Image 1: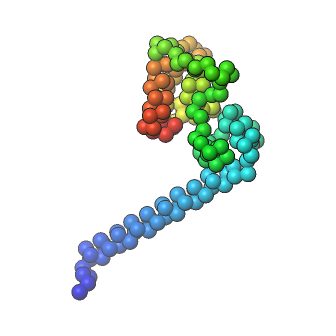
Image 2 (image 1 turned 90 degrees about the horizontal axis):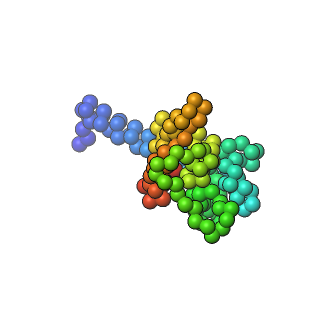
Image 3 (image 1 turned 90 degrees about the vertical axis):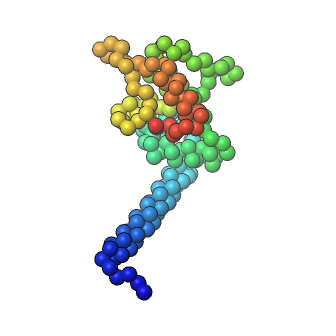
Length: 166
């Protein structure tokens, strides 16, 4: 015999709503994954490499977080391995030495160590929810990043402890 009490009806209604919410979330994730897969689906290997190196899309505009994710997916499809995290080395074979912990880093060095574009770093700095290190004010018109904070963030990423943004 089914329980027709109000409490049972409320409980069943909540179960149905939760199932619907879960299905909607799963569908939204599926649509997002399809959009990521299709964003750069026609980009050839040289275009993927160029966009990844410059941090810009095919129009020369800075990559959005969505485009960065899509470009990483396309990189994996085209090259068969995960994209590198660092900047391409001009002198192949020379190790990229990390700065001393006490150093203050300019944007160019932070870009090289973090392996993302300048615009991505600016976006992360502006995002209060980002775990990327915040810069310190060096002078009225100059900022820098503590090397120990950037290196710690990089180590966390390399260890697979988090995504690039957090």
